[in-house]
Length: 118
Image 1 (cartoon, one colour):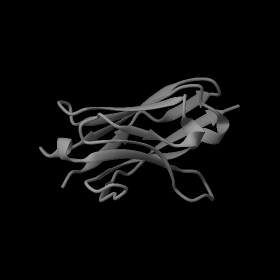
Image 2 (cartoon, one colour):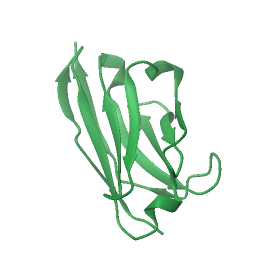
Image 3 (cartoon, rainbow, N blue to C red):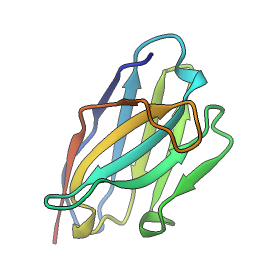
């Protein structure tokens, strides 16, 4: 099982960019599909993006298509979320997750806050 630690969150103006990182411990990182999720105050957690264990397949929520890009570096045990053209509605706590089954997430990080000011 992996453990996950997110970083890279912060305060940014609308239209700006941030890159989130999720570092995984353990030697089996490359066996896991990885995903990013977010939860805004008073709202349910929602899917943002996912990437297959090999990095060959990615998925994005419609709300972030064309703005966010998920990638991974298995040599560094890290998954990234590049966020461009940020909007105030992107404000949320962003968490990464790891899983081996399609749509199945077994391990979660603590999350990192992203705040986009208008």
